[in-house]
Length: 303
Image (cartoon, rainbow, N blue to C red; front, side):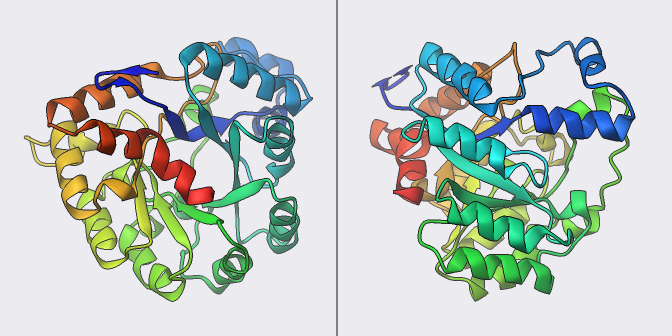
């Protein structure tokens, strides 16, 4: 892809795979027919076959010049949709799966998903599902991940706002008591061979996320989304400050570029890439460091 540094490979560490199963789950919660969601959202709804949605994403990534993308199964129990996508395009996708450790089937489903070889990251949303990342049921899932090589753990911290739920008028009864990155400290120390990813720079817990990175070398930050959480910080904070401080504390090898892309017809959110690449170039990041953030770090996480 053409960047301010010239041509560089770009991979996206944070893309939501909004499958047919994902929208069906929302339709059930809304007590509505699947087809009625399209006019409410003004989005394209995918076919039942996740391979077709995977093909749409490949076409979009090709059009944008993006090498690879991490696809997140965005409701618990939807790992099979992402597995189908990765199976069809194993050189282009990394499979991530959302897990609710409180669900009675979580352990069996996670074991099956990891056994497929196509799920490389387990995604935990403590505030969404109202659990502590230090819960023993989480530990049982982390044990499964730690028994394998090159499996990462994604933990959403900070502010959690799910736009699709808001557009559909669905309540988001989250509990922010479980959203502080400090909760992850003891867990990351207990599992030193696992790589942990905190998205959105901690999404409002930036200071805490930096503290966590400083204390735990196995924790990385992903840069995804508009990072609108900055409005909660001191008045002078901006994306330049965020990147400078993250590079200073975590270093260039623990930052993973992501967009938080999710739906069509928008597709890949190029505005996020443009904003972040512009800022990194302006603060003096060289081409070698840019390549780490935009591509190599994600590749090295799983290869």
